[in-house]
Image 1 (cartoon, rainbow, N blue to C red):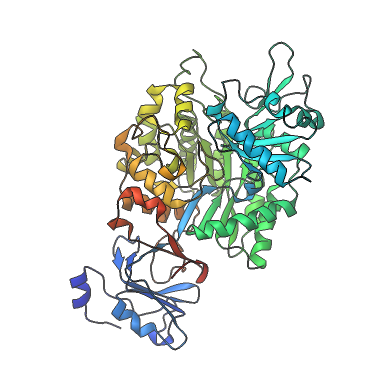
Image 2: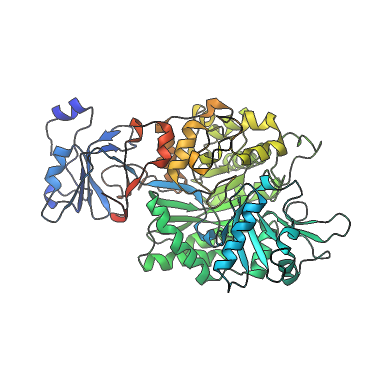
Length: 580
């Protein structure tokens, strides 16, 4: 059915589409009509509109408010946007909802030991029956290079075990009672020597209270506060509605380290069956143990087993290196204060090469934890070899974090069609970045960190993912936080004003709002393998939508992160509504 395009041409819009996703005429009417809005479709051919209609789970119309009237029936819910911004639902390309259990306990996101201990004491006072003292978010910048020490906790809690997760989720701070109950002493072996270990007194070999990197931290958690399926589901049930309230409609679960992976997927399916899953989940098998036999086979089994409407296993995640603070990031250059030391692979090049090759052979996606430029290079080498061996494979590959990139890696990422997954909110001059400078030096930090604009200029793809609850300094899952920092590379005032410069170098790595929105929607959906169903607003696509209080194009970048999310819709169902 054709209509005049005169009004649309004047508005700079496109011809209204008056056929529903099923091919039926507009007379079928819609369940919802959103009109009079600043609608940004993320479709390059028709980027702007005024209205959309939703029929069932799908978008049935995108166009002018006048054209939307044909879709309004007596049962249609009409929402007048009054100029508010409507976008595709935000997609998180790397997060960890199943580790919400890890983030429980006292909030330790402070810049002094005294403040952290005060928070711990307050939490203990309000949880007198807790058998294990829990906390999350201690910052590495509070402690010396040798990390936190059990003695500070022993003074307050000599008789109860305490296990406190670091802000990046990759370490734990424990007291003497925790070490005793867990059976970790001077003779206890380190989980992955050189990579994940218990920091020790150089004279006695006794653990000092810092469990370095994920394997050691998880060993302590399993022995002290084992995450039961019921506890994990309870924590997920609490955090997932908050994701929806932030505008998130789909997410890539980048690893379920607290429980067997099949149980993690089963937990998601349980929530889906109970209509308590407010976003789509695509997940992976998280490979972080070099002793694992056939990780690709495990990932394939999961892919065949879990594929419901909202939950699917799809990917092999490969944990290549570690983090700056633990000095396990793999660098091409030596660490400045340790000549000849380049960091530590958790999974070495030979293992990576074999796994990526096998994944490519069967059309399986891979998703790698790569922080250092050396880790990125090792992963790209594996992808390049696999693509040469199986050039027709449908496998997709993602370099997650890709925090430090040389010019060579930027170019290769684009050439190999490897997505750069970035946690853009990390690219600001907070004290966590100061700690990274202390570890790897200004030379790398100020030339290689967060080079998302360079990747885009080279023709590559960037997808945003918060990596919640992990962080450098402040834990956040909010997409608007990432979008603002992507534009400014400046600290978010609501998380504290302490900074050592106004803009994090390289300043030319700032990107535009439209580029940031694409990274948080369309290109993040690509990582999940769902870009043909979500990530943009188009007739026939699923109705995943977010409405913002203000049109982000009309406000200062510094106001983006405090803009209110008015409504979130997933699969044609409203999952969050506030004041609209």
